[in-house]
Amino acid sequence: MQALGLTRLLGFYGALLSVALLALWKTGHLSSVLPIGMPWSVTVRDIGLGLAAGVALMLISRGLARWWRFAKALETELRTLVGGMTTSRALLVALVSSLGEEALFRGVLLPAMGLMLSSAIFGLLHVGSQGRFWVWSLLAFGAGALFGGLTLMTGTLLAAIVAHATVNFLNLRRLGSEELCVVVELGPVGSERVVERQQESPR
Image (cartoon, rainbow, N blue to C red; front, side, top):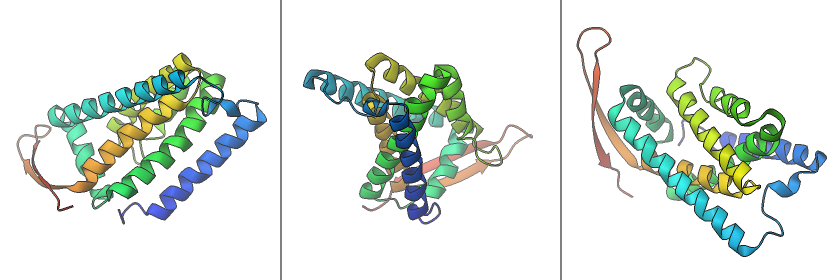
């Protein structure tokens, strides 16, 4: 994962989490991060909902990458950024990123702006500086709406954090552990087709 810079990435999400926690503390909503004082049955329910939502999102993203060329191209580019990521690094990045983003977007912005606007901002921030990741931005909007829905339904961030961490970990681990051979079949402008063959890298 040299291309991303693991230390800078973790530092960014750590700072994001710190800012979000400070805002939650100042507004008196710090307890929304985790279901403090909730019955164990509620905690288990929220974790189960989060796991199910995360796996569903991962399957949807894999299906889109298989059948939609724009999503396929996005996956190919993301794979070049996270290639060689180990399981432990993928888990660390997934946890830190989900905690930071959920604390900010669903903990701070969702109550202040509502579901659609906070999800739209979440999606727009995934588009990248040159708009190359517009597909990722669109998918992030949908994911943000789902995470926000989980937060509104359960009353805490736990289910959203688990869902976010699950989809991030599964996708990071898959993209980071596969080698991709890409062949582009050229045709008339706009009809190019990407053909790929994936091979598992040695563990």
